[in-house]
Length: 422
Image (cartoon, rainbow, N blue to C red; front, top):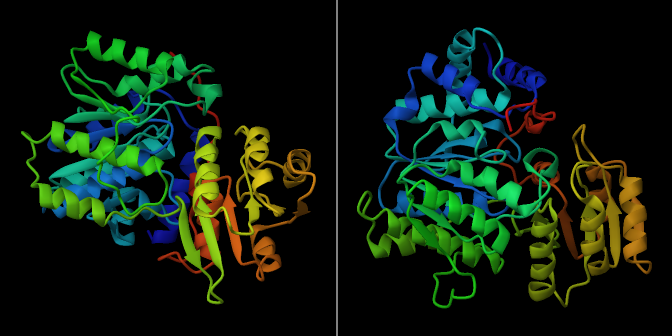
């Protein structure tokens, strides 16, 4: 099997959609030797900020000399981004090897792509004898494939409306799904401040006798600031630092190593500022829900308020694209709407119409592709590309900032979760 064939096999697994429930993952993990029992985890859930918080935790523990596994999703360009050790992507050779091994174990051929990738990661991290794994949930938490592990700590970043069609249409329902990662007696660290959502998390933690550490966003003065832009990253940093502190007796980390790790954290596609060869700047941000878009809008006003801004916008149809347009359109003088490279893309003509309603004075143009939009904005001094992590991944590839070639972004595609015992 070649790497291209392995990718094609993984792509075929998406035909099974996304499923809520742990049965398939437990079954496949058992056939793989239950690698999760050989590892230590920090399990991270939440609506926004999961990836950044995971990146900070990984960087801190790596600076402390640990061999750290990192499992995140979706990937921006290559599937290999999802599975890393000390920020080195899993090799193509290892992807092929694990696909071949687990394909034989997946006898009923019923594992989804995410379930399959979850067990791949577990098997790889166990084989490579990782000291710690930073483990990000995919969708939700309670019935997410990643929830087959028992972590050293559970982290819940925040709760906002997203994926309502699957996680529930209220903050309380979504919080209940995220709180599903809380385990009996295992400490929980959270920055959730929405009263309805926090009440759910507090109740679950109490029921499971799980010590609860709360990060208050109004009391962050003096918190170490990471190099990642955006005030929201201070909250993510506080979460990471609190988690490290909670786990000091399990994994001691010297203060200077904490500082070094946080100072050197890197996470692409989130308020990432890049320059074209001609010196013109592009801000890339994967904001794809209302809460994330408000953070982006705030950062644009505070950090780039004097800039003449051009917006390239592409959003998925199953997101709240109308409200996202309402938030972002007034912040730009020119807006180029584009399709996302996904079967779930919103219609760029509908995006443009919504943007016109939100900002009648803007120059708005519909493009057939992101590539076309980049060509038409080549003379603009400052461009913001946002609306979807899929779009940001495509931009990184087109702009030559991706470390890999031959995009596998199509592996991010999935269909609605199958019915479950929710």
